[in-house]
Length: 144
Image 1 (cartoon, helix red, strand yellow):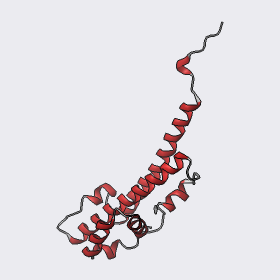
Image 2: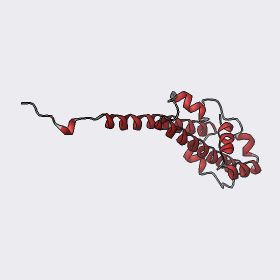
Image 3: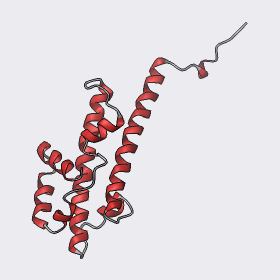
Image 4: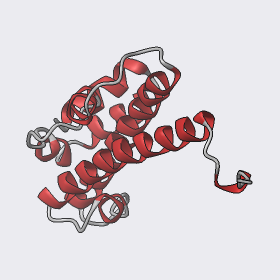
């Protein structure tokens, strides 16, 4: 007689959990890779290195570190909220490319970093507004 080994049975619920985790990992990896790419375009090793320059004695490095720090936060805040909607079935699942574009994580070059690097006032204003939805969209747009 054949006996079912229950430790090897995979339920639909387990498959759904695994699929959600894989989906989240795929989107998160794409976003993180883009953040690192944009920081590398500014000659940093990655986003983690770039944000350590906040408060640096070199005004350009400090401003870039502040701008990239605020941008990274805005991108992850938006991306996380949208991914939750996808996982909850509130919005349709876009492709990774569509999701990345919507999150401001497109492949286009960073535009405004040079200008922001010389404007401590703009950095301060963006940092102060970072919690608002419109500021988040503005920060995301800066680095498209």
